[in-house]
Image (tube, rainbow, N blue to C red; front, side):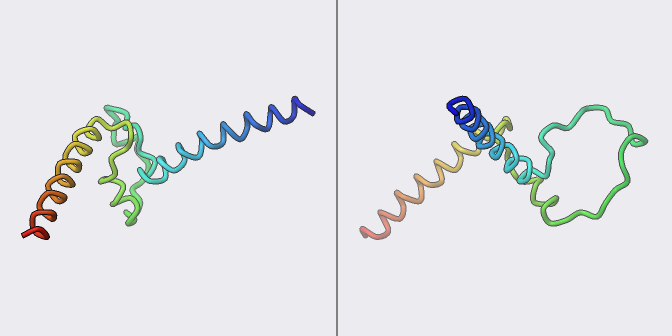
Length: 91
């Protein structure tokens, strides 16, 4: 019985890791990696662009190189907002 409990614990731990990957792929529209030099003849037929496809262009994935810059930019915006709101309320 202990072995089955251990196997179940490992399966649940793996599933929780896999859920994160599934959510990231869903948010980015499945475009985690774009292989270079794809010829037009190998590409599938174009399909109609949906809202999810359009918005996925603007999602920064956790492995993207611009994520650190975005985080620094947003931190500065939040700090400026905190300081200016405090000054506006104070005066």
